[in-house]
Length: 467
Image (cartoon, rainbow, N blue to C red; front, side, top):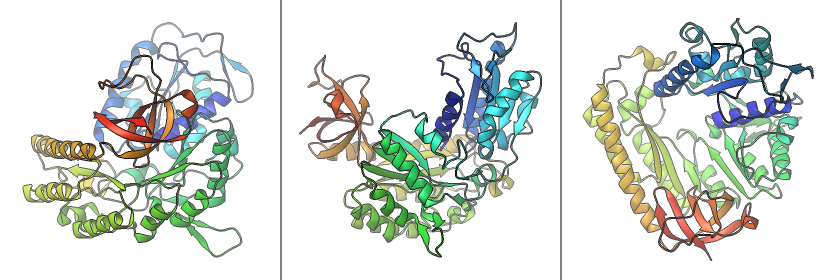
């Protein structure tokens, strides 16, 4: 979601005449799009933004001939660099940012993202003042806004890191209130976009060359959109069916799914809709029922295991990834062992494994963070080692198996495997199960599907040859 938001901010600023630069020193405007899910992410921002105080001081910074343009069409030559913190941290730490980082010009919460251009202009005109936009509880989704989520100007002239792939938000915010999670407090309560706006956006993306979209939501399973002039609602499965009919689109992905709402209807859609990829990200967080209750996850470990059994029966060969938290308050060795054994039983294709850190505003923030740092680190490393062994075994099982790959761009380098040759053109692509693969080809294969036989694996990347 932060990557999608960063692309949206780029789109807004590029449309106003800004250009990207490669260094802090060359920039007139520096923005940090932040995450508050973990304390570690915030700590990195505190440190990096603190370091930038050195380039905010001294004589005024004069912009290069490619001057930024204001919303009014006039040319602005900034007297000083503008430094802004945007995203979740801006809202979560709003009382502390200007106190700790007085050289920051403005802050902007995720629901106020469309205010950024105005904030930059205010900061340029009044560089000694602080500005903030953190008022909105929900992100506006009005059709026709120049750069609204449904707005077509953003899509038509929008910026994307990858031309072939695009992020598409289908909802914003969250209503689950897991006890450890700050998202509902910084991104607001859940709101679904209109299905027709999503379809129109994807069609425009396809017209612009996109071949694969990833649908984004804190919980895509709870998506609901009212049909105009009709009492019927479009749920997530129905939305997938509609998107699957879009001509020119090759692949559909989505994240994230919540176990309490995932069901057989979703799995059957993944099986039956030819463009929907066989990859499910289903965070389990813990294998202990006691900890899951404290986390307010609304399912048990047994519920989760039965869901996985159902998924693998319906979606043949589908991959499964997850999130896990270790060291949640009161977690015992027995609780951790249950998580370890669940991981060992499920054999995830990949897992994001985090050490718990208290987040302000959350229910768990009121609990004592009583697991020692050393214990959290030991449990974290134990699960990482287990997952590494599982992943290596899964990689070996793919040898000489044919996978369908979508070529997304030229690989920066060829594989180091013995059979690769210098001077050949290698593509980077993704399998339907969301594994990265490098294979020999040519520029014309970018944006096209290829059958690739897996011959080797380097780190987390498959190495293949077209068949």
